[in-house]
Image (cartoon, rainbow, N blue to C red; front, side):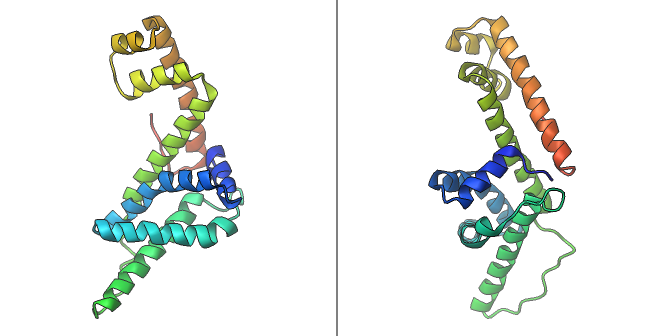
Length: 197
């Protein structure tokens, strides 16, 4: 998968030690980690532990060492591997603490693959919206967000933003065209994504 521009720049900022970017990374990818924990049937406290362990592992090691090689490395796969390995480590650690016998984890069943990919799609869609937001003026994006994404009525949005319904429809159509192009680019870059608007 080619790096979507926002993810590449976000990772580059994280690698440079940008505190705001670390926060953005945490907020963007925490749901993915929790999703993986749900796939392993972790309770809320265990999911909290998983989030903390993955972020710690990522920021101490992977954030500094991950190198994007076009056509060779998928960040999604790389990050999923960190999450999966950390989850398995936590399961083993908990089993040892409870003096339980640990049976080999059944790798033929991927407990979080589908959930993880669904959450990944949400994260990529948020990135696509961020890119759209940067390419149109704030009022146009707000009209699109309220009318097309939040499904508020055209009359309510027009009145709130002080625009005609014709301007609202034009803003929606312009944003949809740009968003479709962004989403299509993401889908071409990652054949497994199948992101839809």
